[in-house]
Image (cartoon, rainbow, N blue to C red):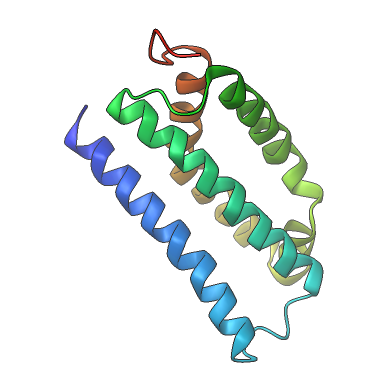
Length: 135
């Protein structure tokens, strides 16, 4: 595996962990009160789900079977549904209200470009390269 890919998975995973941790700490300190509760719940659920997906990313990079192929296929399908449905979830609705159209589009394009390798590894691990001999 390339060094760039390894750097990506570690930075992506670390940013995911820090993001979830910071949301909990900010909420505890009362600095996150302006954010609607539905957005907060959605963000935490997304962090947890993405952390599960990161396990597949590590399985892909290190070519190790983790859990089972069927589990990762279900996770991948759910990830596609979540990605498409995200435009109607509370966080995106809030962003559309708060940002100008140009900034909203820029924000989403950058987010999708950063997440693209993540989704490619998840789908490849689930449907193409799940290590042989595994369930």
